[in-house]
Amino acid sequence: MSGTVKLRRNPATPPDERPALRRRGRSISEYAGRLVVGVLLVLGAVFALMPFAWLIRSSLMTQDQMFMVPLQWLPRPFVWSNFSGAMTSAPFLLYLGNTLQILLLVVPGMLISCSAAAFAFSRLQWRGRNALFMLLMTGMMLPYAVTLIPTFIGWQALGFVNTYIPLTLPAWFAAGGAFNIFMLRQFFLTIPRELDDAVYIDGGSPWTVYWRVILPLNKGPLILVAVFGTTSVWNDLLNPLIYLADPNKFTLSLGLAAFRGLYNSQWGYLMAASVLVISPLIVLFIFAQRYIVEGIAFTGVKG
Image 1 (cartoon, rainbow, N blue to C red):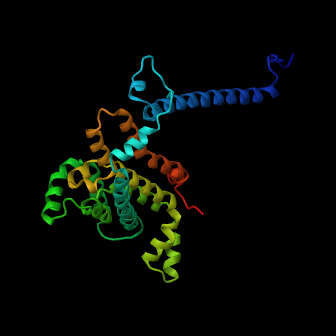
Image 2 (cartoon, rainbow, N blue to C red):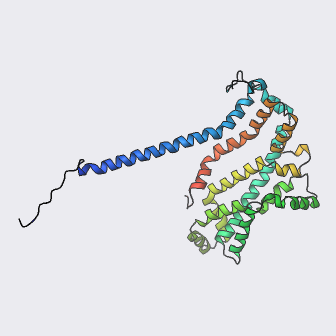
Image 3 (cartoon, rainbow, N blue to C red):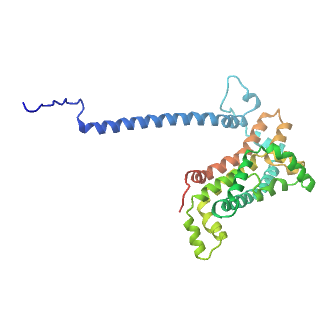
């Protein structure tokens, strides 16, 4: 014979069915991966929410129910008087007003100063910009305790101790806002520079670019900075403890610490007061969640 005949074995699976099997295998593996990730997220959420669930449960119990053996999760009955007792035992409404007063001064100053600095580092050209930005970033590695005593001595020399000025004025100069400046700068860099050129061609100034182009396109990151600022002020205990001596000027965190010292044996009152203090932050995150996710996920031009 002039040629050889090659015999081809018949595969167990027809060739036209192999892509379908591969797709089915990929779908099964993807489903299994998502299932594992979902289970891990649920377990992580359970562990993260366990202290909060314990706090709410204890705030609605008597002291005997809290330490009952075996453990009792549901209050029987619900002791709502813990909240009224906590509110009458300490002036938490006064503490809330003081905290809101500080917030209304700190958050706008933080937004204006940090966004303006980020705009200067990202959209303007000037000598020494990169060197100064690197120097600013080194401030993130400097522990707060290093500057605590010199800062207090300076405010004391100016006569501003026991006032809200040391707690509010630094925010208008982006003091301690290196991370916010860095984050906003990264978002500002994603905006095409053609938009700046279009504004300059129309006769606009850098202020026009900053106010009418950059800020409207970065609402999500700005809201994220506002949430971070609100959280830091709301949870700040060290600075009010250092600079405030008048009980009528106490913030919520400082008032809660003082309440704990006075009512350390009244666990029901203490748990109820803790729930009252942290509830506004939970509501804030619920309403700002969409903007927080948008600020983290999207880094381009948003219409």
